[in-house]
Amino acid sequence: DAGVIQSPRHEVTEMGQEVTLRCKPISGHDYLFWYRQTMMRGLELLIYFNNNVPIDDSGMPEDRFSAKMPNASFSTLKIQPSEPRDSAVYFCASKAGATDTQYFGPGTRLTVL
Amino acid sequence: GENVEQHPSTLSVQEGDSAVIKCTYSDSASNYFPWYKQELGKRPQLIIDIRSNVGEKKDQRIAVTLNKTAKHFSLHITETQPEDSAVYFCAARDYKLSFGAGTTVTVRA
Image 1 (cartoon, rainbow over the protein chains, first blue to last red):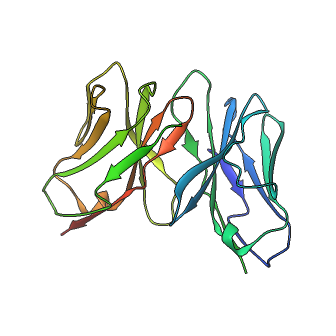
Image 2: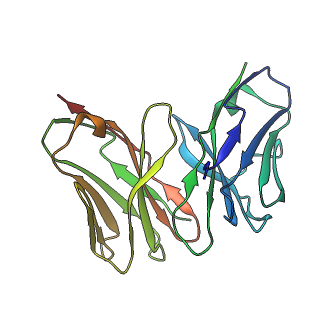
C-alpha cells in the first residue's frame, strides 16, 4: 500500500492567492483528518470526515478555510485568500473505523509570502 | 475539549541511558493514548499506544504507562540510540485526538 498521499509536497504562494491541498487516504479507510503543524501551535486538528461526511470542523480557523471530500479516495483543503500566518505544514491522516491508529501523509509545506 | 500537556519540551540524554516523557490530560472520558515520533521534515509515525483499560504496554525498548486516576501517561525509552533522536508527541482521544506540544529528544553519542 502506498500510504496516505498528499500533493503538492511544497507550495509557495503570495498573499491573497487561493491554495488547494490534496489528499488521498489509504484505500479502505473511512476516516480522514486534516491537521496543521506550526511551531507556535503544534499539531492541531482542523477537520475530520467519516464516510466522506464532515463530522467536526471546529478546528478550522476561519471562513477562509474550507475542506471537501467528494469521494472515499480524495479530499481537498482550500484556503482562499491565503495569508502569511497560514504558513505551516498541513498533514492529512486516515484510519479505518474499527481501529485506533491514524496514518499520516508526508505533509504539504505551505509558505505564503 | 481535551487538553494535553507534555513535559519536558527538550530532553538530552547520553546514548545508552533512558529517556522519560510525561503527559497529562484533562478529560476523564479519553480512552486512547498514542505516542508519535516525528523526525525532522518527516511525518508523525505511531510508535506505541495504550488504551484506558491497560496500565502498561511494552514494545522492545519502548514502554508506555497510564495512570487513569491521576490522568497522566508516560513514555519510557531504554538503552537510547542516536536514531531515537526526534520529536515525540503524546496524544489523548475523547472523540478526537488532541496532541501535546512535543518533546525534542537528543541522544548524544
